[in-house]
Length: 174
Image (cartoon, rainbow, N blue to C red; front, side, top):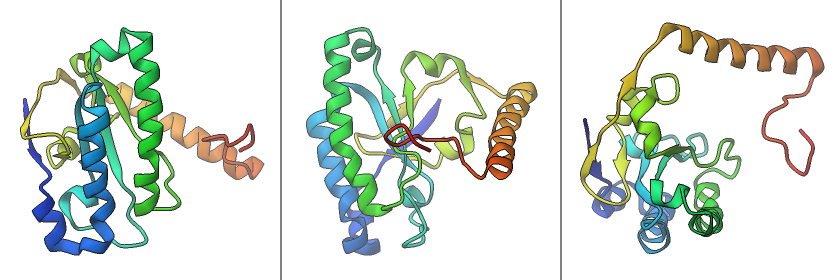
């Protein structure tokens, strides 16, 4: 069980109103359009801890999609449309956003592996919805972490050798 605090508008307004205004707008958007589809919508990383670097930091998220949405294709399609509509908030913080939203399913919390997003990161996260608790069944397996590292290493080695990073295709091109 990890307690998660609500990211308050006051925290954002005190720090840097002009730079962080997209977070306040994203928070409103999440409440209005996404709350029916998610268990929680977290901000993590330097924006959550307010030690970001302008022009360098991106907006890191963890969107926990509820089971009801995942099990109903109409709700899932509606969620997809709405989450695509939220992508511009990421770009306002970092125009070169490289990973977009990070998703986890509600049931995925029952088999949560540390290499996905370490507990230490989640514990520093802030919610855009409310104060609450994230309950997960956590596994930290060396073999899984090594396999994840090997896959990333292979991707970067291939990019070096072929001069093409085969990650996040755009219009069928890397």
